[in-house]
Image 1 (cartoon, one colour):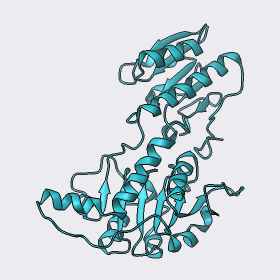
Image 2 (spheres, one colour; image 1 turned 135 degrees about the vertical axis):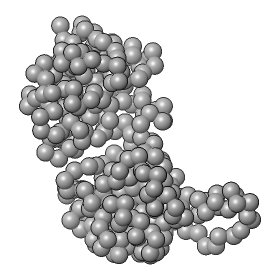
Image 3 (cartoon, helix red, strand yellow; image 1 turned 90 degrees about the vertical axis):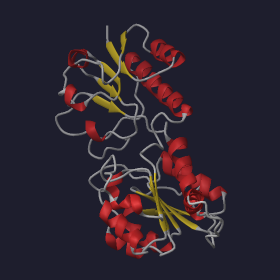
Image 4 (cartoon, rainbow, N blue to C red; image 1 turned 180 degrees about the vertical axis):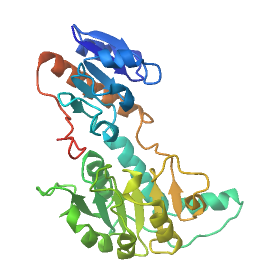
Length: 318
């Protein structure tokens, strides 16, 4: 009998869904902060986000099904045994993160962040001209599930969408023009909005350099809802402080939590949210995660192909 360890916060209906998918297995529900190393070492399947240092390349672990899309901590050599399969929850977060990025985009275009500052100061003040997505060029850097969802939103508002992705392929209907990551420098000068939703990989770390921001329009808006280390805090600060771009909205930071003494906090043209676009903040996200995990648990126990398997060399879904 396979031992299945589920380390997720679920409601009763979601638990029942996973129990039904794991019929015939020995299922234990726990939490990452409560589970013992012995339980982790004895599990054949783990669903959730166990501490990477407690896995220790367990020979018993056949499948680690993450509740996150990111797999950064688990693709490090020595964390998982070479025979352990790793699957993520790509697809569960597209709505939540894309809507958050979309909200940041409109907030910055319409200067709502500045008006909130005026409200706090009890000032009735006109902050001038605003932007619109209609007729704007939007570069979506990272055209996976989240980027695709965001692309659909901005295109529905009348934007011209440039999708930037790793590999060539057909141009989807929600994108006007497709470019490869190696062509990023060509896309940046054309964009009124740059929305980055890149994962944490060797190829994407600090991909946005001082030169990248100099290539952007000084009226451009930069949104980052991917990983914070796509741009250094100093590079972003300089670009905003020096007026190389007009504004930015970030849900991620190079170092999290963002230090209290970071100069980024004091920038008027920056909106910061504390990595909350994903997670379990949107109830629909948890439903999608439960469906993905239940589907893969059922397939694993039946010896059928799994979905969302992660490529250890890239950190992406295969």
